[in-house]
Length: 338
Image: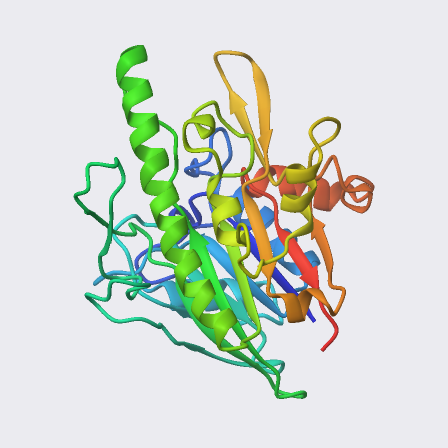
């Protein structure tokens, strides 16, 4: 069984309001990439990924005019994907939904949110979480611009029940800020909010682990150990919070563990961004698949489909080119024998 997470940059811009693909030579929302080129590239990646379930980050928009599920299922039909059924959770206003594409011959799946509005501990993800962010003893309201997707996934053959939480946590980048002082202020504020979201997710993780449930937390966290200088102000990254600290039962992701324990040398990366002012690419590990201890004990096999770091991807020119054209993130997969 293969489960994957994949952030497809501005997937929404590849579909019209009827969920039909825009396969033409107009520019996509990706820099210097046409809609035809990006659509075909995304299809190649999904086809060669051949996953039983994919948590799609930045999935097509869902609102009164557009339907995420329709767009994704049309996409899956065009490329004859096994993962051809889609579900979403709470829609958002960012044009970047979180959705699950899955193979209905392998799984039963349903959106199954936990928590209640107004709860002090782990409220429902489409509501408000109260947390003191700046040590003034006054709780501040935290909301998700993209509420995590909670899925109950049941393996048809074994009957094994998996709990999935799909995440697209807040970006820490100081978008729109001008001048060093404002950039610092916005960056610190965004990190506080990002960490608050991770604390909220960890509270839900604690509930699942206490109940003995098999759990997978996956997606784009826009964070990782040692990614920016502001982390020193808080003493930890959001990833460390979600994975578990001190005496807490810990989730496991080998790539995150590698960065936490390796202070020097090569570091895994799941994303690649061009820095125009410096004329170079920046790589970072932002995408994770964390599993509960019972699943970790089954010795899953993780893989980042990086076109330059993964030999099989590099040696397959069609896949390598598709990975570079499709998105600024690369898929992360996990193979697990149930």
